[in-house]
Amino acid sequence: MSIKGLVVHFRRDLDDHEAERTIDALMMFKGVIKVSPVAAGYEDDPNRQRVKRELRDNILVLLGEE
View 1: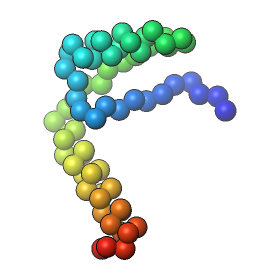
View 2: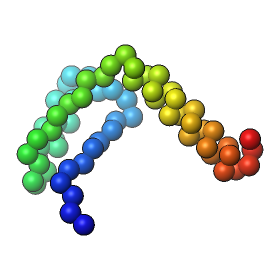
View 3: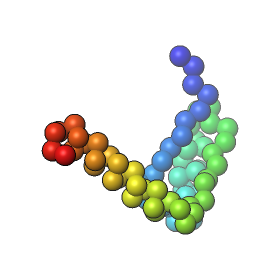
View 4: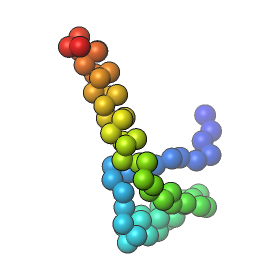
């Protein structure tokens, strides 16, 4: 298998200082040519809540508790 890139998601939004340090660290990996930040938007929190709710519901279904 050949991989040309990765997508990384953080548990929480990073402030500017954390983002800069993280980008610098990722650029140190062999073969990394570009690291691009993605700005957090107003829709991020509702999306995270929806994903958490869906995961919880799926786990309950698997456990037979729903």
